[in-house]
Image (cartoon, rainbow, N blue to C red; front, side, top):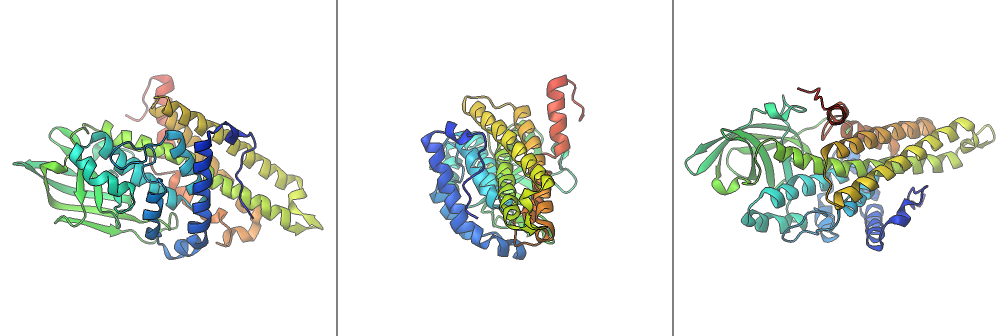
Amino acid sequence: MTYSGVDFYRLDETLSDEERGVVQTVRRFVEDRFAPDIREHFRQGTFPMELSPEMGGLGLLGAAVHGPGCPGMSQTIYGLICRELERGDSGLRSFVSVQGSLVMWPIATFGTVEQQQKWLPELAAGKRVGCFGLTEPDHGSDPGAMKTRAVRDGNEWILTGNKMWITNADVADVAVVWARTEEGVAGFLVEAGTPGFTAHPIGGKFSLRASDTGELAFDEVRLPASALLPGARGLKAPLSCLNEARYGIAWGAIGAASDCYHVALEYARQREQFGKPIAGFQLVQQKLVTMLTEITKAQALALQLGRLKDSGTHETPLTSLAKRNNVAMALDCARQAREILGAAGITDEFSPGRHMANLESVYTYEGTHDIHTLIIGAEITGLPAYR
């Protein structure tokens, strides 16, 4: 089942030569280096960390981040990368999304020159890995109520608290951690191995099994003044990081949906019932047409959002609309693909069941579907409903 993309409205024809070249490069990487092993990684609950430097060499880590050693490509290219990666698995795109949008981007945006020079080149090369600590056991959609605290002690800081559901937690060399201080919410770079800082993997997951997920614990962790991200002031700083990650998710979900559509279409052409391929039955065609229609709409939405970001527009509600729509669309596509596959759809021989499980998490993280509804609602009415 050779994959050549889903492009019913010829949107790829509007891409530049550079953009199309990146798509082909990432597509080959996913096919050759990731796809052959994803079933076993999903079964075992592991992530192929050996691919990190390979992705760094291809410029996939922090693709749109500008700084020492960073690729510095366009937002649209970053989106296209996420689309192709999530066709492989949401865990693969999550790794890249966290590394770039939630670790490299805040260091490049809020960090000192010294912090940027120390971390960005090796993070971009995939030689080091980062994670992002905002969500807590008791505070997800309301990060402003976080309990993690950082207290000044002379020229140092003492960090205490816990972070939960953290991608890359157990493999990270550095954590971008957000804590409440007397001056408001602040960001810190906490290196693995710092006394009092521990990471614990979360097991028993039904979803995102091919992704490292864990908890971060800080037991009076003493940090030097140089650990503070000086440009990050208030809760707006971590939320701006999330907006960058949500953008990548809006693109990535299209990749998962496209894979589901491709697998379901090929299966329907080959599976015969009542003397003919099931692709020839009206109800199956209806499912396929609905999937294609929604994917096409999501593609147009993401591409326009990318062009807007490249032109300097970074409005949070625009990203929320794309994340909200595209992830819900992808989850619906995965479910319809599973229906077309019948009993085969509940096995890991085919990808839609895996995508369906993963997308349940994607639907929730980086702002739940409902929270994005409220963000957009506040924008269009002027009346915030979440506080």
